[in-house]
Length: 134
Image (cartoon, rainbow, N blue to C red; front, side):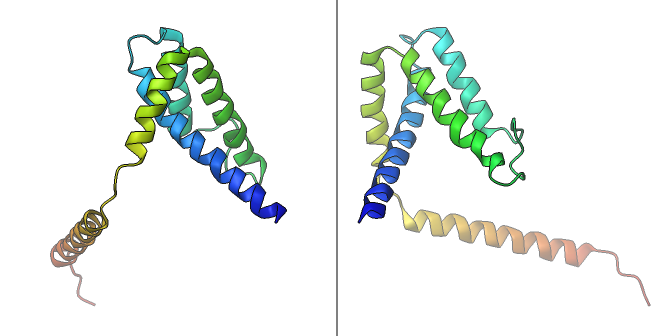
């Protein structure tokens, strides 16, 4: 029972973190947000997407700890620098964006296109690869 409550609270926290990340992206494009909040949002996004970490991820446990601690703290700091009315607006827009329906048919079409492209590339490489006689 207690673990189910913890799991649901962790899921809620992760959902809010995802929503706030999208809201922060939207806020960074808003002209009412100060430049330093925008700069911090860009720096956080760059750190999140960068393959270079303060502590490399291949180090067990500690490698992911910097991502688990620094990113949420950075997001929290950037959100605290954004004016409240702008953040409220951006959170509502982020909720609307995250509630959009997803298309499984589109996903399948993209996967089929990638597989077809990989097969065509493999066929072209095999057909034009120089063969040496034994």
